[in-house]
Length: 253
Image 1 (spheres, helix red, strand yellow):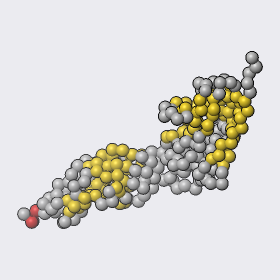
Image 2 (tube, one colour):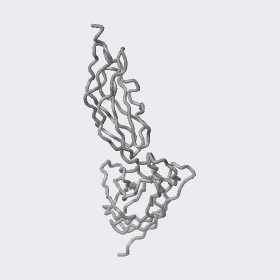
Image 3 (tube, one colour):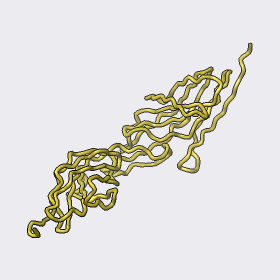
Image 4 (cartoon, helix red, strand yellow):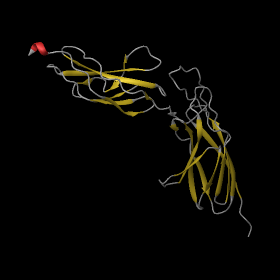
């Protein structure tokens, strides 16, 4: 009957299934259409830094009436959000669903290797990540033992705290990777002889693991070797140059 038509009822439940530093995936129950099919679902959010409820950007951009899940995008890192869903049909927009529990987005992780990037000045709703690379990296190779040293990376105000470093290495032309986590700005690796090794150093933050540095290539020969390595920043802000100076000597019989 036409007289019974009205806006849709609110979805009974809304759940937050997966969260990253700038997205949240939502799922909800279907709204009752009250005689007029649901054409669109709308998602709103609020956080401690906004006034009232606001529409958000989603994927898909338009959520049709047959879709019961969507990803909210363009969120800020390390902020608590609440979400609610509304249904719309040919009569109008229905009442909002129950509000989700507060959900905090993840801490941000750099999308490029830590470089000489300046920062600060972020708003209360943003966590600024401003890392310099580990500087003055030095290494010593004696027999199978490789020792690595670098200057610690220190977080400034509003930056994600650096909690340690991951050193990963593999044999050249091999896929198997061995990793070592250290809280210090140094590491020791035992490298079997007679192969070339590729080594990466990553910074760890409260938000997770950052991307790798430029690779370090070390040729582990059957005799002893010594060397040093120094990080220097190229004119390009997205690259690092590792300058290696290696001297070798053969043990006397």
